Image 1 (cartoon, rainbow, N blue to C red):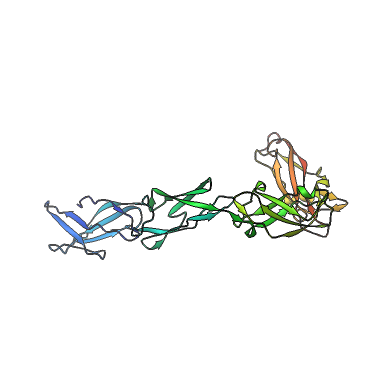
Image 2 (image 1 turned 90 degrees about the horizontal axis):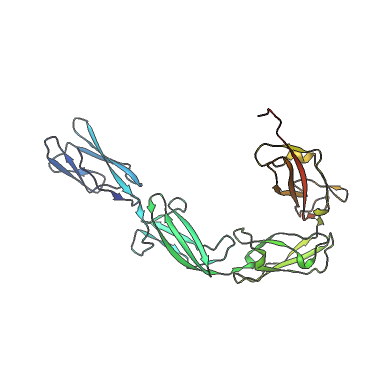
Length: 334
């Protein structure tokens, strides 16, 4: 038989117990010493062959001892995950860098993190996870081991203001009749997160109510302490307000299924959306941005929004809702 083998800790390299004790039938013990190259030797015996397998990753490794009679005895030992709670050290196995600061983001500021283990790059999501929290301008990152790594450590960082010059517009509600000082815009940070409108002010060259077909130049100026500077100016064409559209969806009914119901491309062929005699095209002039009351029988509510893209029919912005009837499921149907 083979004596019990103590657990070993993951290193990223094949692990071999320093000594493997083999108990013979006569009760005597032979101690086989690892020679550093995956092989074992004993001065008094050259008849036993020892092979260690599955000995890299966290889990159960196997030691197989085969005698001259070709019979094999096996013993397992545990490979435990490496404990990262000590964090990054200059001379430790876990090394790397975590930035001292990070720029504000809508989804939460997060510093750049690069980690290595015994010289090999670690992969976020595979070897570790990261959770960051920000309070009063100071962030805390919690790095938690995963897979071959266990436990966690934390690192603090400072949050610096985001320069709006690196951000971009993702649309503006500029439609006829809207007040210039009430224009709403969507601004994205460099990671495509939506910046809350309360954090900035919208500056425009227009005044009073907007007229369809005219141009409006906008920029966003920082108001919150987590932002700085301003965006580049961008010009938008004042669109026709799709809120004035007439919608005829009487030809369409849906049937209760127990699941949320949405309109299909085929449904839109039978739905008429008109603005000033122009028949608008689904997917070009407008899109669906929401459904409500769309599970049970009754009238579900569909919300459409002008795309703001100029087509041969014009440019349309704003939103409009209409109703589509959901019928009860017929008796006896599956």
